[in-house]
Length: 143
Image (cartoon, rainbow, N blue to C red; front, side):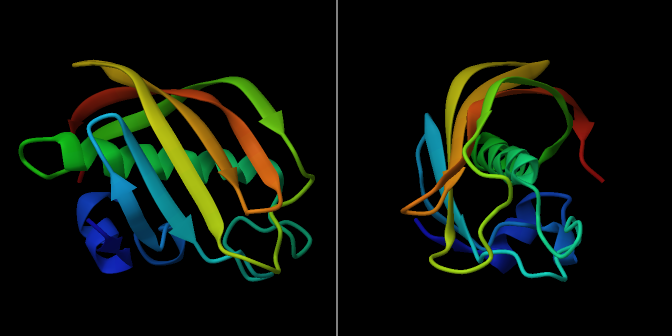
């Protein structure tokens, strides 16, 4: 089931330029795949007109937030905070600004009432920008 940007913004507290995802291309109970247009020089997280590769972890974190909202019976995101990044490997200095769309994939490794852990990969067809694992600590309902 494909979900567009407007649908993503209804599921997570990120909006406007800080909603980094453009579409959910597929998802299941175990994983999610999303796409995003490549960032331009006006991207809200750009530095010196480029978006550092470490920002790919925020794309992954937003994908996990969407996934959590899709898994929730209420269909609403819970407030959460990115608590830990583990084994992050950066394959580039910056996220490419030209070429194919960015692909964001996250696989759920474990989930409890208090948090979840995902393995993620962010890149284009020719470049792995970042991979690793992230832990999100969950709170109440997102505002």
